[in-house]
Length: 204
Image (cartoon, rainbow, N blue to C red):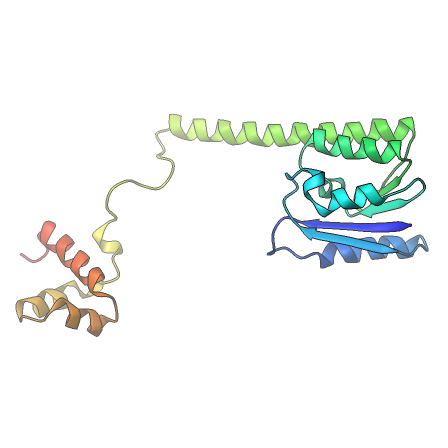
């Protein structure tokens, strides 16, 4: 049996790209996918918590599993290596479309699989380290990270361009509700803006 496995992390991603890649791969080798398994789930989940786990249980000696890339199996070295080891022990052949790997129960496949998993783990660690170093450098340069604390500048308020008109409206006795309706905002927006005006003496 020949199986195709597809996984995306969120429903905002599409499985169609992976399916197309696998189908094109199979056509070039004149093979037909007998059964598809696709799921929307994070690769951080253990295999037995995914449909992949069910598929792995069904695979038998001599079967072929085709995926778009090794990262579809998992998100870390230990997870990927565990799955590859199970496939090799059951003598399942694994094809990966993007990397062009053909992994079976032989020493070359095991070495290649380990090298790939190790390099992927190292790269993730390097990215994480570079991010931490960049943040530390910004802190050392005095850059404030995260959302700014305190009130936003009054000039960023939606009603700021109409501040003089709003002041006049209030002086003429118009209610907050009427002003809100006039500018098509809610009453709280008007109230908050007027309080800022009063606090910063814009009405003087």
